[in-house]
Image 1 (spheres, one colour):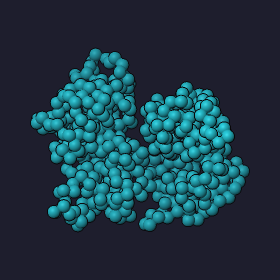
Image 2: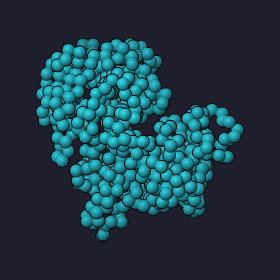
Image 3: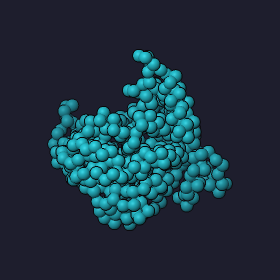
Image 4: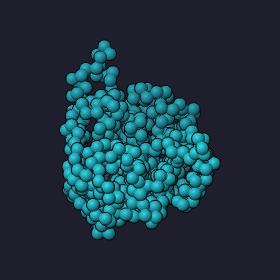
Length: 506
C-alpha cells in the first residue's frame, strides 16, 4: 500500500448470479482529498462502497486501510478503522433528538446512565466545528431534509471518521442545501478527512473533487485529476460512447385540447391550485421542496383527500378517492420515492411491471402468468432495462433500472395523464437520456405529462410550460420563451415577477 493512501482496494472482484459487479477493481484514496466515484447505474459504485463499509465480502482481492490489509471487512471492523458512510436515504430516528441521533448506538454515559446533557454539549461542539447553528435538543423529525443531512455528517464526525463515503448526498437536497453540504465537505477535507464522493450531478463533482475515478460495467476505466478533466470527456468515459445531446430532440408542436383541469384545489397542505394540462405537452412543476408540487400530485391521484376545488378529466368533473379510481380515470403517478412508494423491492421485475393492471391480466382472481411474463419482456426490451432475467428481484437492480421498472409499471396501465415526480433522481446520465426519450415519446403519442423536478436544467430542457409553487400556493406560470433559471427561482422563492410574465398570462 502506498503510504500516501488511507484507503486502497487492490484487484477486488465480486459477482452475483448473472452479474459481474466488480471485475478486478483497484482504487485508492489519499489523506485529505475528495475522490469522486462516478459511473452509470450498475457500474459497480454501490458494490465498491459496500465492500469498504463491510456490508458485503468480495470474492477476491485486498482492502487496505491505514496500512492494514484485509481480505474482507465487517461493518464493525470498518467503523473501528475510521470508515463512515452517509447514504441518500437517511438513518435517523424521527422521534429522538438531534443529539440522541448523533450518538445512537454509542451514547455518552455517566456511570451506567446515559448522559443527555453531555451528548447535547458534544453535539453543539460538533455543529460549531462544522459552522452550523442547530439546536441539539430538537426532534430530528422536525428538521428539513438539508438539516437531517447535516446531522448525518455530524454523526460521522462524532465517530472520528477518517474516511467519509458520501453516496448521492445531494439527491434529496435543494440547491441551497447542496451548497451548504459542499461547504461542510470542504471543511472536513481541510481538517484532514478523506472523502469518497459519489454523485450523478457532475457539476458538484467538478466543484468539490480533487480526483475522479470512472467505473463502467464493473471495471475501472480511468482515474484522473479533476483539473485535467471536463464534463463531456467524463460522460464519454462513463457511457462508453459520445453523447452530443443532453436532451433528445422532439418536435415542439401546438398541444391538443385540455385533458386535465384543476380549479381551486385545496388540501394536503396546498390551497387554491388552478391550472390546465393539455394533450401532447410536458407541463413542468417547479418549486422548492415542500412548496406544494408533490402535495398537488397526491391530490390529483387520490393519494390524499381533496378538501376543496374542482378537478376535471376530459371535461368531466371527477373526485378520485383512491389510486384505483385515479387509474380508472386514465391517471398515473410515478412517485418521488421509488423504493418506498413505487416498487415492491423483494418482488421480481415481472411482478412489479404488472402491479397496476393485475385485474386486466387475471381470470377468476388468478393472474395469467404467460400474459404477465410477456408484458414484462416487452417493457424490458422497450425500456432497455438491464436485468439478468424478468424473474430478477427488483431490489437487486441499479437505481436507473429500478426507475425504468416504475415507469413500465405505470405505462402498462396505458394512462393518458402521467405525473412523474423526480423521475431521474439518482439516475446516471445515460439512463437519464433513455428516460427523456420515453417521456418525449409519450407526448408525441398525444398523452399529457406533468413533470416534477428539482433539477433546473431538466425542467427547462423538457417542459413546454412551467408552473411554479411557493409555500403551498401557485406562484405563477411561464411560457417556454420566458424560461430562465432566474425567472423560475424568482417565482419559487415567492418574489415579485416582471409584469410581462404575470401569472395566468404566459
